[in-house]
Amino acid sequence: QYFVKQVYTTFNFFIENPEKHHIFNVMRARNGERLELVFSDGKIALAEVVNAEKAEFKVIKEINRNNELPIEVTIAVGFPKGDKLDFITEKATELGASAIWGAPFEWSVVKWNQEKLLKREQKLAKIAQGAAEQSKRNLIPEIKLFEKFTEFFEKLHDFDKVIVAYEESAKLGELSKFVQVVDQRPTKIIVIFGPEGGISPQEVNSFKDNGAELVGLGSRILRAETAPLYALSAISALLEL
Ligand code: SAM
Image 1 (cartoon, rainbow, N blue to C red):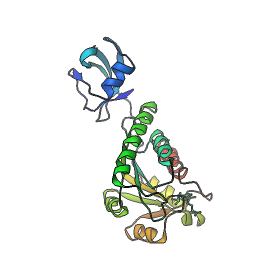
Image 2: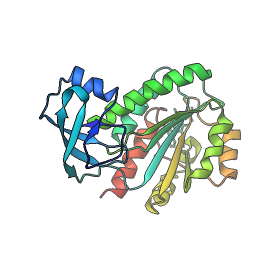
Image 3: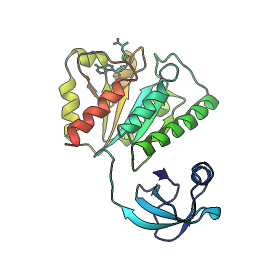
């Protein structure tokens, strides 16, 4: 399946680069060939190439498939080292995240400037698109990397529930709290994870003062790249039965 940057239409339509290049120059689609296209509004259709030279398609039939999690889940991580964000992005997309965010936490080792952040965002957006196609998602997760922790913090108001995966809560056996919050099916949640060094006491207090739920994810300490995947898998198991 391929994602295209336009909303669903029953009229003939033309697709643009980079999808145009991929479908016609790389995959060499020809007139009469049929492909599954996913539109930017999440609708999926079987579409036929009408004119390969002009990248023109017509919809044959709409495909009724929804592979999204029942609630919107944003994964937010404190910048981890190296290429871990690539791995998190690919796997979190496969597991159904609606958005994948990163921000500099106090104990993040890496410090990226605006230029580096933009490049990383573009790379991650490509990884997310590839993973979303492979997992037959209806949407490509939004990728957002914040330059400042405060910019990220301000965005927390947009969510129905803010959940912080906190290793100290894990020691207190607070996995049940995570299950309880998810079981209430808040429409739009964000789950926050620290970098390798964890979440600092100041950060934990700011989250707590803003009404966040601190939860544990089992008694084992998970690596920064494992914890978000645990949370998404648990959400799927709890809500997609
Ligand atoms: N240095 C920290 C420590 O030993 O306590 C571990 C940090 S862990 C590698 C990275 C992040 O994953 C944590 O900040 C937390 O958000 C999340 N995490 C890992 N294991 C967890 C667990 N069992 N429960 C809740 N969160 C966990």
